[in-house]
Image (tube, rainbow, N blue to C red; front, side, top):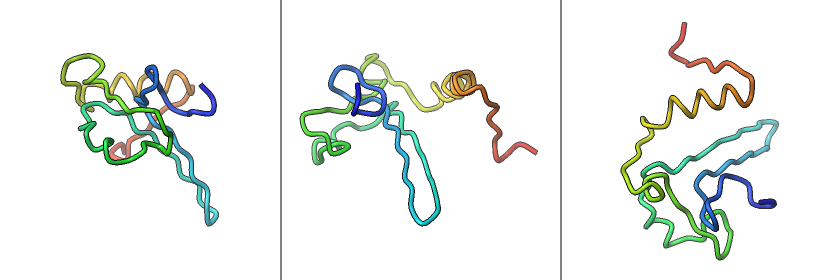
Length: 92
């Protein structure tokens, strides 16, 4: 819910989305926690949000989920939602 961007499961963030603008350059990114070692987040306040946590697909589903498991369906959904065609740097 606003103002918390990203994808949330309860009070835990699963996916972070960010945009940065500076020096006439705009960059954006997305981080989807698949099989992230969540213990690293014990040492920081994730995304600067007090009282909020971080989770992963592996933690929530109770099984090991790698980036390779989710990459193709994620990219397919991205193209559908944003009505676009993604082009790989490896494509001619």
